[in-house]
Length: 294
Image 1 (cartoon, one colour):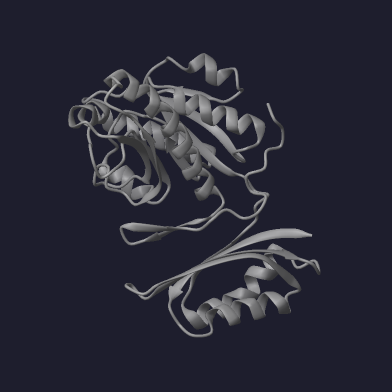
Image 2 (spheres, one colour):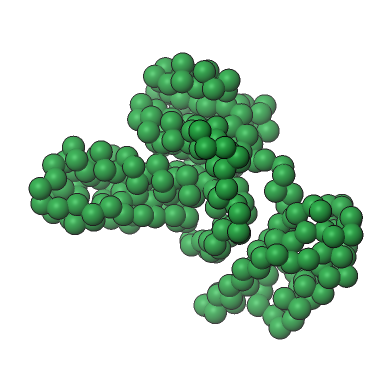
């Protein structure tokens, strides 16, 4: 039996869920998981369905028939095949903890994506990446060559067919043009609990303010620096006894976890943009399972 994921966004109207479930039943599909949210402030409805085709209905059969349902309710929708892994480009500078964590999760099957390239403005992780049989692209970035460098990055995205860019501590600000072109398809990890302590050294700012919680935020990249819709956040407790270096070390772990969870949500089509915010549905049963342990 083939499994599929249906994502739907539309204006709130009576009968949407009944119409969708009726269609899936008519097509011989069994619904295994359903999450929905009705935003009363915006009047928008969001839902995510996982289902299996028990009578052999193909992806083309399902999409062709659903078009009429979608037109009736003016839906933004898609039917995804979870077996088709999303193609991802990772970008990194000189901090490698997120990169190494993602490579490990990818290797054991805990992050079911195709990492089609790693781009870096430094050479530090070339050997690590090549040893994973992943193409490594060194694209140096300066004030003078930034437009050319971004053009080369977009060439990599185009040539590999990448659907998502992950900034795994890539310490360069992307241009407004690139952010617009890849809207909703660039995920960043910010090494602080946004919206507090922005900028290049948030852990030092947190230390100077004597905070008791530090954290990390993963968000979609927009032209407004560090202001994109938030996907995932987490914190770790600290005390007066920790030093700024302790903050950085503790922060590495939470950054890695938060970024991995944000990517997991995106590739499983659990994240819906809702203006400046996101709707993030829980994971379906079994989606965290790894193919192997190490």
